[in-house]
View 1 (spheres, one colour):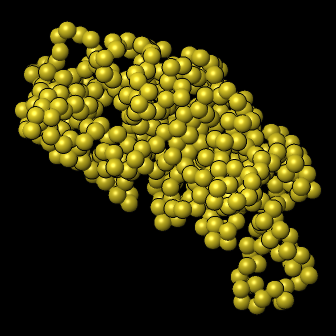
View 2 (tube, rainbow, N blue to C red; view 1 turned 90 degrees about the horizontal axis):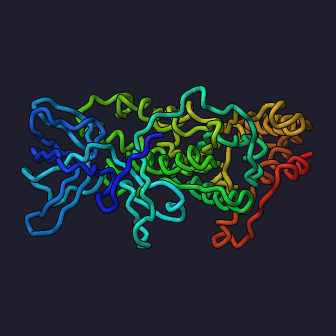
View 3 (cartoon, rainbow, N blue to C red; view 1 turned 60 degrees about the horizontal axis):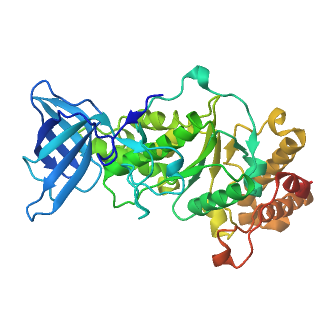
Length: 427
């Protein structure tokens, strides 16, 4: 594993070479800069460039960019990681000779960082000399771990119908306002209590950040998590809220770089970008990264290219339904749309598997009967179907539960329900 030594104070990923490679800004369009370099001194793709200087009113400017394209005529096109206010043509640009690098190790625990690995929690500098570049290759196929085990979340509907894999990737799919972030917060709360001592990180970005920062912040969080997996050989939890913003930022950057858009206006490199992030989130023989990702579903359409591309990488999907949320049933998890590769009798056991299948059958039959009920009413159903409807409605309510993180809103104390208790409750 290559560790980029950087001197403290030289900023993220800045090389300590005496002979700096200098260029000048030739053009600025929003967050995209074109920089001219001397012949034969072109920076590599993904190198970090730093613009330092003073703007027209004498304010200090310090902007880090990442090289995205080599344009020819000794020019590169780079995307800024912060606002480009105050930058001018002709300003000096330093090629750091390395990709963006972020601090890693025990000193990062309990801290909050921006995309460049700079602490933003007002707790002073980070006490570590070890940094990793944010662009790294995924573990080789022979390093991957194939052990299958589930980890309990304490949320009934998840543990029973779409159990999560330890060291797997999990997606929480839903439109706006159906409870993805609350579910992530509840998982953080439950897992921290049940499995104490596991380092976990969260990746997220404000929507007012430039697209370059939103596109790279996921890689920053992942790089810090990889250190604990590969070097400390620990099991790590990585929460990403929201992976759709990563795709959205990639789409913005792609348009700014002049690429032709693909389906629904997304970037043509959507699958590649998603793959380069997701393939690094995996379990190796050293340790594991279990990743829980919120996925915004535009207009509640699961066939949209962004959620559809994400589906392919996941071990379990928890789909949130607006219909259930409208009924006031939380967590609003759709028992029929949610899936898991772990729901197999040889992994979860016969009793768990049979119970889950019976619950799904009842829910499916209820779904089929809903049109008949809407037109003719309950009285027109056969005795058996009426029993199914009553049972399905009980199941729907039984699968809801109060959350610890929502106590302040609901007034009901939160409940952690073990898997064995859930199965016993159904039987």
